[in-house]
Image 1 (tube, rainbow, N blue to C red):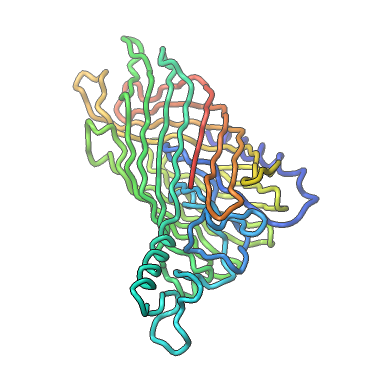
Image 2 (tube, rainbow, N blue to C red):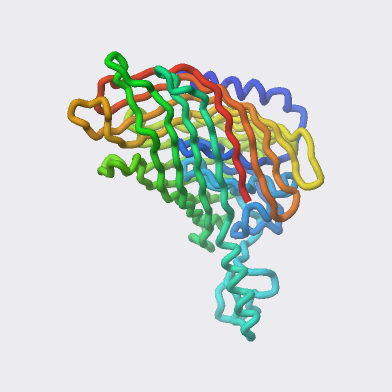
Length: 403
């Protein structure tokens, strides 16, 4: 499996080579994360403009030419939560301009001055609430399969909402004033197959569920060194059973090094907490050579993207990406003599071609659509037989929307 994943990373690196001649910085939101623990791209590496507010809604500030790294997406703690800038050059504000206290007052920086009227109090409360809420996202993916034999089809649906809270706001080890990002989420998987028989004992429940809570923090300790940290805690089961194995704890710990204004190196680990694969290394770099390109030459989630056009309200990008898909759940086996409860993993590798649209205005809908090839599909059962069941390759369609 590791050799196949390395092939994906090399393929994306080759796509990146023609863009060497241009130089500026930019980034764009990653595509919608699959509910099956998708490992999406991490945040951008480039500093936003001086007006960037790290606590304001992400969608309200995304302008690729000026604010690289912002995003309406809310991937998991594994993938960095919403696209968040590598570091900020301006102190954040939790309230609109003009509400900061004058010098010498006791109100700490970043919090509203005492209101003098009821109307001002309501406005301040509303502004703070809207700054905490970052946005919502949903996605649907379909892996083709008719359920006959081992030709398993999967529908994946998930939705999340993200909130940002001050966290070590004025600390010297948080020079970008990175907030703590909290994302509750819900996912549903509908399984079609495999078809069980006396010779084929592999089975799956008709559906499984994810209920999880992500937390992520992406600080810059200095303008050069930073980190991408995240933890996800959730329940993954078909709800017919709820045992200790239904709980999973996932996360990531990645160090970042700003090598040049357009290039950032990354190295760390990603903890999947699956039954077959517990841990993956995370290594590579992100390169944004110009305002129309971004390349994540990064294992295990390589991606290359180019902006190809624009309409009155949106910029349009095309991309090619690779990912290690899948997840782990618990269920009660129907083919077991003792009707046993067990855990299972579904693992695959995905290569996708897609397009995404990003709003030019301060608010609006963003989204993406992609078509992918899914291979190295495998079911792993903690309690067999069979312990491993290979599945045929298939095609994937995925749609994501965010606001």
